[in-house]
Length: 380
Image (cartoon, rainbow, N blue to C red; front, side):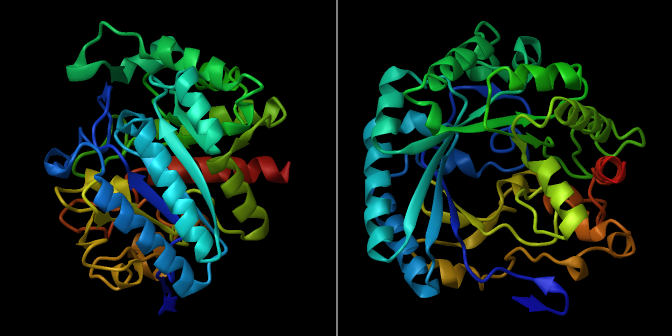
């Protein structure tokens, strides 16, 4: 739906389910627990049965309303494995039955830090055809720099536990479940080439590089600075990916390449002018927008509705539903030659300076540097 250059969603086809609202790590950059929002404190740890039942009905209702043929349910947290195998299995079976009766197929993906990804869990995921994304920030030093045990304890080695889980996941019996790795960029931690190589060593089918969330008022270290350290890091990682023959998908790089070449839509919310067709459902049933908005202010991600008070169609009409498109951006962004590729970056990253979202991204220089670097590579 487009109005005066502003694009709003017509339907959701991705449902990010906060199955468990706590975590067994304390990562100092976490957008849920360490930034501006505190809503997680009052939500149930595990999504209760009546919430899960209502959710599956709401998804099926949305599928029927829009004639969708395929939806993706992303089990998230905290860490969803903390909910336990029975809860994961019950929700997966119920979602597939309800959505299947509505005429669509359901892909289920679970995002985890890997600490609980043992053989028993992998067997459960195999039985229910649940794909797995794992968070890994590079080698041991880089990964453990930000990821600590409960209450910030440093007497654990999350990297060792996660890489052991990845070794199990790469076993031929489970390999097809491996969805990819998620890595948060940290220019201060070390060499981007070394980080890329450490990730590539696990032979993932895909890597998704994320920028640490922050705003102009509360930026991540290095964000908003003239040296654009995050952009430089990503350029070096891109070159390594390119030189090694692009051995796996890297969503930010492939999305920029596709938009440069064909004007195609982005597969990552990091860039692009089209809205991601995703909605977040908290463990109490609250409907929230992109988790990155937790960096803005307490409650900034909350839509004002829940699956008990609103259908997903009704949620699309709530005040504050994210708008995208060039005309939703500030004057500086609209005048930029890269705007149709960059799309202003993540909404949360534009917030601050007393102007709400009417700013370029705090990562504007970084994104510009990366886009121009990839453009130059494509013209060689």
